[in-house]
Length: 208
Image 1 (cartoon, rainbow, N blue to C red):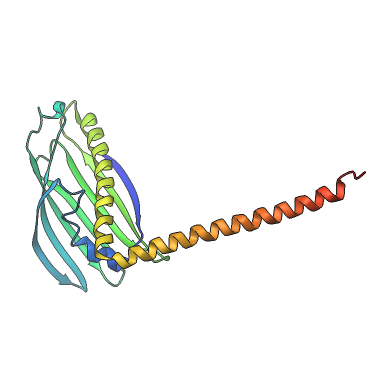
Image 2: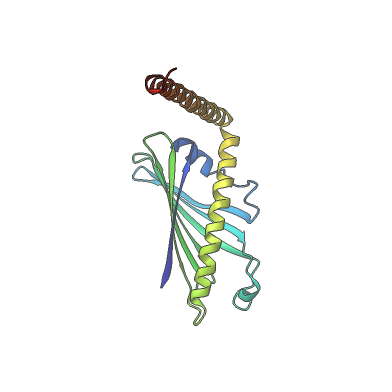
């Protein structure tokens, strides 16, 4: 039995920029746990780019988990499919070894949105075969996965902002412009309501 978790994130960058940054997302300030990354295979089939990479990450476990697993690192296999026609990048990752203790299978799909931004739909299946402790281990795995999702998003955005600084300036300008427009609209509405209120007061007030 596996525990399922899903998370959706939106990046304020185009799909093309996200794909470019994907191959350069390590290192970043939030990826201290990533020790190594190596490309094992890469080929083009049917107009799609298939890539297989091997990553090594630290694997801190709580005290109660040391009785089952005390390795300082874990190997992660990452397969990805880049489809230029559909404009999607789909990744599949899974841990190698110690799968009986806890197995994490993850799928992430990066897709282009109509507004030009990129959405990442992340799905994970976490399972354990440790009799009597599988539920606790799965619960721990889900919570750690949530934390890792946050770190991954922060780190990815850091790389995107570094690679495309002009785009980040455009975003800030757009946000500032939107904020100003909202303030102007609120001020206009306030003045209009105030004017209407004054007319109503004048019309219904008792004059000496």
